[in-house]
Amino acid sequence: MTDTKGLGLSRRLRYLTERVAAVNLPRVWRTAGTIAASAGRNRLSIFVDMLVSSVSYEVAFQDYQDWDFHDLTRAERRTFMTHPKSNHLAQKLNAPEFRAQFADKSQFNSVFAEHIGREWLDIRDADVATVEAFVRRHGSVMAKVPDSLGGIGIGKRNAAEIEDFAAFYDDLSEGRQYVLEELITQHPEMAALCTTSVNTLRVVTYFDGTTVHHLAYVLKIGNGGAIDNFSHGGMYTMLDDDGIAIAPAFDGENRTFAVHPVTDTPIVGFQVPLFHDVLQFVDDLARTVPEVPYVGWDIAVTEDGPVVIEGNYNTGVFQAKPSVSGIRTGLLPKYREAIGF
Image (cartoon, rainbow, N blue to C red; front, side, top):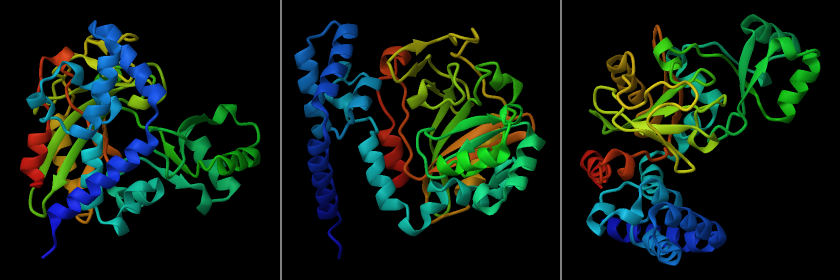
């Protein structure tokens, strides 16, 4: 019989060893200063608590800030899912030989062709004339590095700004922006949040072979940029089971927004259109590659229904921020009930 407890301990110790080796103490000190200033607390005590908590609760330093760990009791802290815990699950549950179908955007678009709702092209399978025809047909396209994370390597390219398509093709190749996609026209109610980016949903699921468990509903919103990623200036808030935003959104700099700062659209109470269509859509997605049961799906809502942008086999973690939501417990119990770890 396999000693799963021993394996789990070994994995945890290996993670902690790697964590200690990689820790950027000046950055942690700066983050501690930001938290201390906003909370009226001693910087050194926050700094020490961040280091201790990273071991005691397997919490990343950004997690510590995002979920107000400095203000939570030990019991409350133990209810929060964290990025290190999520990474352990992804490595344990998602079969390595199938991960490329999610990690590579070209492969993903092929596997989930009936769900992406847009035309796309891999320039490695096309010549300059084909690329030119594709871009001119759509006017503007999104160019993507197929194996990028966090929105890195994604950019909008406009046909009207391209003078030499041979040079454009070479530029895409040199930048490894091999995947071109038709732009998504989001539902007008979603566009009302922010017009410069497609505002998406992150739905985290676990498929146990029979049932698709929904672990988190997230509304991601842009803040003037071309994408809504948290790491690129975007913000997020959590949704209830009916797709209604339960609290102000917050961003990576710990700023909170009850009303969007650019569009003045109220965020608290925002109702995601066609939300129950999204839930059925995600159920279908989650059953497509059962060998990868733990996924965070990025979903755009159009007037014709939901479309999938990508699936993240090593999904990030999203939870309500206690100081702005009043919710002082995390989603770890929900994850454990569904997955059984």
